[in-house]
Length: 126
Image (cartoon, rainbow, N blue to C red):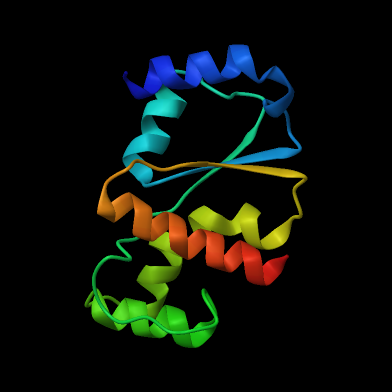
């Protein structure tokens, strides 16, 4: 089932989760672009996790300054580039508390490691 059809189905089944109090986090900018181009989840806040946690070193706590520097170095980019590509797209997750966060990640290893990273972050954040 395609992403557009899956999200349309979600919107019908769970209309209570399509609102400004719910954050939807997508695995990557490509998924986010599909959502935006098709005007899906238009009433909700959205964020994309633009990372590849299945490669390169990491550290704890997740998303702190040391983590960001290590990830940027591993991706052969600067801390500023990492901020722009990864952190800025997740800004709602860091700045606001949500009653509900819906995580849109696939079943492949790439998506699952990204999902586990976010779940570990959310667990620490309570």
